[in-house]
Image 1 (cartoon, rainbow, N blue to C red):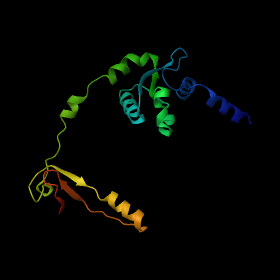
Image 2 (tube, rainbow, N blue to C red):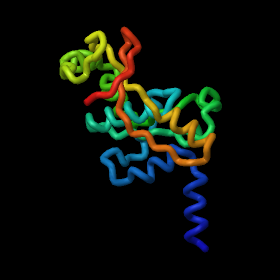
Image 3 (cartoon, rainbow, N blue to C red):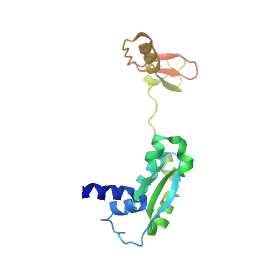
Image 4 (cartoon, helix red, strand yellow):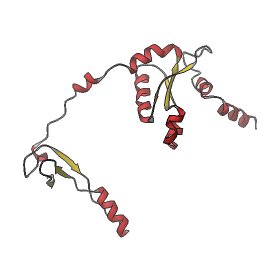
Length: 167
């Protein structure tokens, strides 16, 4: 009975104290180091990307209010978005990490050229998109009640709108 009451008391504490207990083995275990909000995001995936970037640099971070917003996204603005909490001494380093521009690294990525098999057989264009049959198969499945599986990989040319199968 006592264990249940203790666990309920921990869950009733504010988020800052829960995170303090969760990080009791961390180097910032002093009571004067409090958790502060570094940034807030509208979507939880953006917050998790920022958290992973901070943890890659060695800065401990926690995502707060993500479960509420995942369950009911309409309250995102009312809660102030999904927040990232960090320890107060790490604020300057974390702010510098999140404000760095990584676009130069993205420009250095080279993508493979389109092979001759992935060209339009009618006009020879490289502007192709993958034509997806899964929505049509799902609609037919709902209408007929029979499972219809279509695993064909087809491309659609953006120039001449020709749909063809890659060999």
